Image (cartoon, rainbow, N blue to C red; front, side):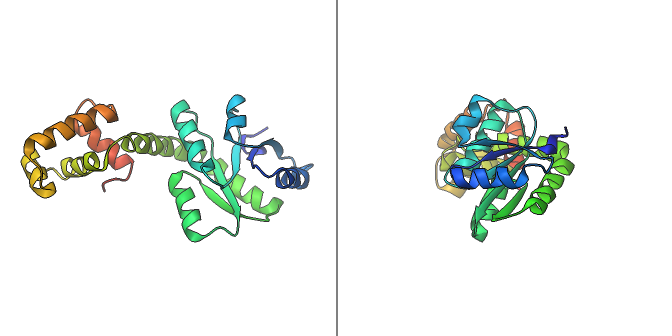
Length: 200
């Protein structure tokens, strides 16, 4: 069985879970249904493609889990009549595709094909990006501003002038920033910022 023949379905709606499992029965796609990320976490799969209903914190929670475990599975999100912002946010969080419910076998197969093609390349890039973002999220808004200044090649004095704070305060924010990011030096912090798309 290929990776893409295993569909890990996460949906809190039992009727919709049953409907998706039913119409894919006999298709050659093996569906493993779960109510939420917590239930999935108890039996985390080694293979497959995750199809997650985009509600609440589900997509970000999945990304955090995969980032923490360094175990990346392609993630396809879905919702009924999703707004543009909802789709964009899910993709920015790490979803490789987005389906609109109701969908059929053809749409699922197309999404699984995308997942199979992008699995390895996307997995490593997305994992680095997700890990970098999780590190950036530990920072306060001021520490992020200092990081952007560092990435722009500014000295502590110049960052201080930009933010209207003293160079000494910049130095403290800079030390805290490196510590929270787990970065040993400034160039590592800049790399993390670039991977997280905080700076270009």
